Length: 290
Image 1 (tube, rainbow, N blue to C red):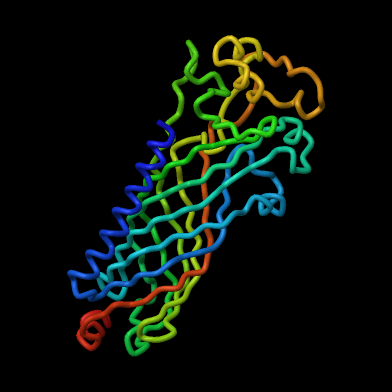
Image 2: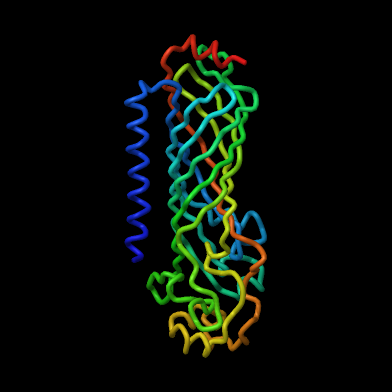
């Protein structure tokens, strides 16, 4: 089932790519912009270090091909596919209390999103009529994630094992690996010519899960978790003893593990390069000048 979920995401990505080429081909490619945004990704959640400089250690590569349809000089409809990675590791932070917790995770994220860009100054690259504008972006996205960690030299998928008692009697069900988010942010773009645009963009994702990092609420007592979800869940539910080379720490069920009041976020920042497809340039300029 795990492989099926990833394959489903990839099939959707491929379908969207085919749709992009279909639209461009059969619409004579008028008033479209196609490009790619590449840069870094990070996240905000229970395993993020309190010091921003330490958080930057967990930045990873991200890439996002996109297609925009120019509604007018101020508004663009936009579809995009994003691949990024996020991670966190308590053992790498300077805060002693967080380091003692000793949890870690990483996950790839595959996202498909649709939204609207608002060009604040208006944007008309043709004849460099309005070649520069900051813009704002908002949309809706669907994404797939699958947090893992390293344990005794093996990569362990965390969602199936239930490190906070998920799936046990009296506890929550296991969280879904397919979620929706609200992407929003902004950027600045500049027309180098009628056809070529460059820019930068920051995009934040408001999610509705607290489990991007597999950490949300409370510890479950070692033996209770051992009996309910097995030895791997018990070992990874509380890794403090592993850090100090001692026996598993015997915390009572309900002890604080994360912060369930705050949902997780993931963030991308990058540089973009795009190409404009425009049919009748003069008509586009006259139609969209104001």
